[in-house]
Image (cartoon, rainbow, N blue to C red; front, side, top):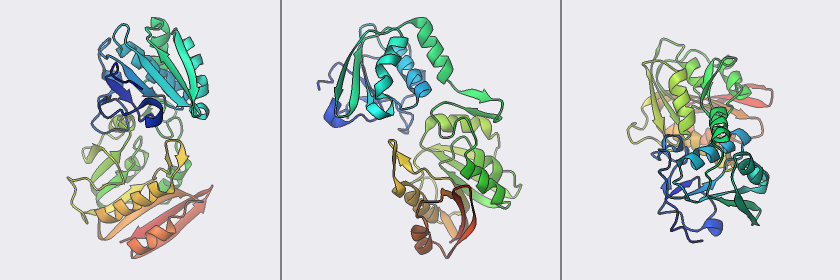
Length: 307
């Protein structure tokens, strides 16, 4: 596909469907350092290719932001797997007041539009998908973020079984900051580095964890930050992801565990929550002096592993 009319991309659409996106400016919240689509100036983008998000509210929000940011007459090419939002793309664009061309290829629906869309419909979609304070949770959150409208039960189980922590620590894949908030309840914690690949989650976490001991990093929990010395931390807490692009990927959590082991000093402790079916024991045992199953309930396991 000729992408010469496009300047930006949101997400990582399949190369065999859209071609090489290497020269396009990335807008995905999962790409550290990328420009935020919600901060793009109105009518400033020449053309946008979007792998539309699977969640309905999140998808309409992203589409509406894109349409607002496009210059008059600039194209928006939106696509998604049929079973992950693609089957509703046409309905979403219709609801946003857009005329479009739709095609199907390799289990994806592909829609091409130039907008501009209905201003009232765009404003409503943006308002629905924007960050908000959830009064029930008592947290800032946003549709599309992990466990955005409930406390994840695995995290809740870890908090219920985790003792007061001490020293320097990290929360890998911190999300909205639920585990971090619990860790910082201990006055003996000196510092806590909160890392997440989702910029939106991290921005919410900054509001949810108003503590001078907390530092925030937009990055990949599978990698030891260059600014952090290895073998430096006293503890790590985490509820690692095990889905990538909508599919289960068990190596994600295993990589998080490897990263935690590299960050921890000798004697340092990892507190981990995981779904019961995930085989993390095999990666914990060679990396830690001891790995103890603390609790198993509700489909989740809690481990304490000491390096």
